[in-house]
Length: 328
Image (cartoon, rainbow, N blue to C red; front, side, top):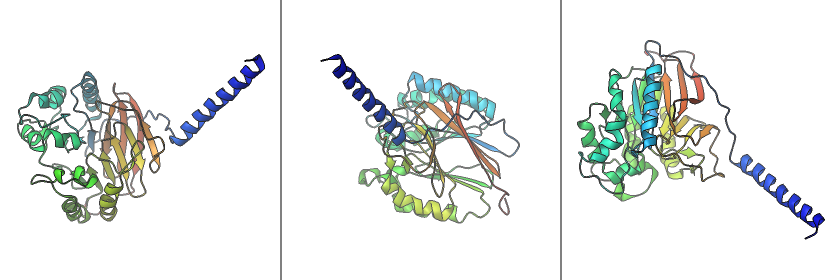
């Protein structure tokens, strides 16, 4: 090959690479700048919630993230935690509620949280929890003071009258699979009715939060059409403000037209995105870093922080409301 032909070929090849990189960055969506504003310690009456999902793989990374969670919660005064499913990873059913894998996934890494007065982890279920056996996790929680798993669907208790937090069982909302529906698990229609009976009729509630495992929107997986069709009308009718989910092993904030969706599925096993062309509606932030999230509520403000595995802040976002609800 002549020198002129070689330079022409190199120029063509490099131009193609640069064009491809530019197209990839354009299609993968905007990247949010790092906002370093960590919330201060809480004021009286505020509720600070740690949230994370997909955190049950019993790995050294999980233990590192758990230790960072505790350090951040000491600073920020966390009131409780929401587990967004896949609390333990198992390829088949656990050997009852005393299976040592439950201690490895939860009891050991999170035992130091007992130093936080009145603190508890409220757990929802994901697809790996179905494999592990829901009754095994419920039985384990019954003997673990730090862990609250009343069932597949429940309301968090002990909150101010202006704050309502409700767990839903997304496997039956997300997927049409009769194996997910049994005596223990509600079908999607009964879940929708229960959410509407509780949340649509809630008068003085200022903030309404649903949490579960599967997100409606995500950069990596696109739109979960069945979940959107089944749950979005209820979110709209009841005025749900936030939907917290895991499943996608990343951290992401998506401002949908009717609600804010916070994804935190990177507490132990983060993954690179495989869905570059499926950008969700108005994604404000996305990270493939391992970590966790914290959200604080007052009657007039919600403040979200995302953190990496070492407890360094990745992203901050706030929304305010002019006044508390009547009777709140």
